Length: 171
Image (cartoon, rainbow, N blue to C red; front, side):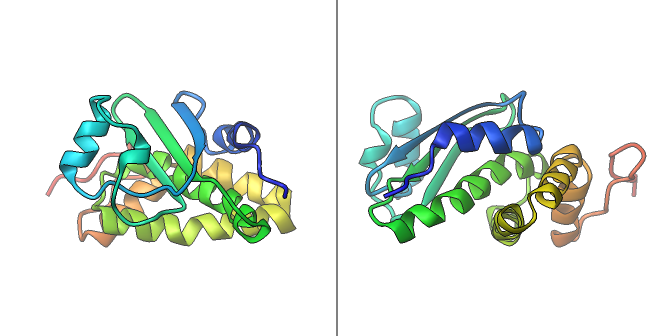
């Protein structure tokens, strides 16, 4: 089975998405689950429990990050079949896009809608037309303070930011 190299994938996508200034680690975890509660997440964050202790629903990927410090710990479910291994690149892009969209401070449901839409498009484009995928990824990364943030603000019904300054207009 051909399991994607997480570090190679990170090395490819992070610069394209302008995430070089971020401290991002990635690792495979068997039977990856999400935290079942805020308390479970806090126990993990304080180092009293590993990610293997989460009891929530099974997930393909999990990004536990801090947008203020630009740190992210990304966990990817260890694939067991070729079909699961084929899902890994999209999962990696999905989790990395959360690092880009974090600047929007959008509600989780809106952030997920943005990321669920963009990740498959980027990975499919990368397979079919790598040069166009690189251009699009660079544009998204470069625009983290405008393009994605404005989309998230619009989805929340908030005023869009001024393109020149990147700040929201005064009411």
